[in-house]
Amino acid sequence: MNKINVVRPSMPPIEEYVEEIKSIWENRWLTHTGPKHQELERALPAWLGAKCVSLFCNGHMALEAAFSQFPAGSEVITTPFTFASTTVAIVRCGLVPVFCDIESEHYTMDPNQIEPLITEKTVAIAPIHVYGNLCNWRRIQEIAGRYKLKVIYDAAHAFGVWDGDIGVGALGDLSMFSFHATKVFHTIEGGGLAYANPQLSRKFAAWRQFGMFDGEQSEIIGTNAKLTEFAAAMGLCGLRHLEEEIKLRQLAVQRYRERLTGQKGLVLCAEQPGVHSNYAYMPIQIQSKLFGCDRDTVALRMAKQEIYVRKYFYPLTSEFPVCQERFFVQKTPIASDISERIVCLPLYAGLTAEDVDRVCDSLLACRS
Ligand SMILES: *Cc1c(COP(=O)(O)O)cnc(C)c1O
Image (cartoon, rainbow, N blue to C red; front, side, top):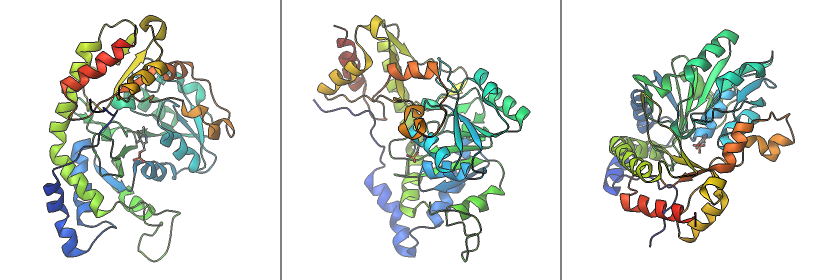
């Protein structure tokens, strides 16, 4: 039996990648906004429904570029049910994370809990489209508008998600995308910011190049966060296969739903009406009493059969020592509860129906 990992990076046929990088040998332009970088920056807005996209060396640095616009000490309302990066980016930019609870259905920020957290120091709301589930963006926008706050989405999971004809990259002031190897679309390592205001492009280009606008001196405090031409070339290849890959993911998710819907003690994430999903993850909650086995035991037993699930997201970022030691951390009971029960099952393009059956058989066998 071969092992089944929770994710498997997509790769184009090797000949296609070699063809794509040949021109790099001709022009010797390896990094710093080369032709591949420019081509990818031009191609991405259409996929995201955004006006502009700026590229970075990874998603995390894109988040730091977004948060670095605020004065140190300002507060950012976010949720702790996310990958480390969201909270760490806020903290590294000298800002204070204020933790809002999530909704129990799609695990995104609960708009009803935002307003009591707003103070005179609040500058932004930073919600996360977890697992590709869209946040309740209309309500969030309405609140942000009333209090004149910026909205910065962590859309790392949501590449290619559309709400009707509105692309995820059109939401809020800025949306961050991760192009890490394990994401639905990737450039090996890489990331981007999507936004509507074209004047920001120059600023982000300077920020990722030591804060230099004209190449002589730093005018803002930037860093080195450039995407290489080899990474951009991988992205250009990936875009050609993306639609068919999302189809394959969808088939795997359908098979999971057929096998697991209605099983006692398992809670699947409901599909969002009207939303075109990217089928990025397959999260399920395991209610240990009803199911007859708890989440951690399930993960251990499945690993014995070389099936690797991931406790994603556990623990909450608000429980990290770096938060506990530095900040007053708000209680988020729903997020705490779900993080104890959640697990992501293997999902990637190329996971066959037989693979899904093996995962489901192994999961369901934990009951006895
Ligand atoms: C992957 C991810 C990031 C960070 O992206 P990198 O490209 O790995 O730096 C941030 N937030 C979430 C929710 C992620 O899943």
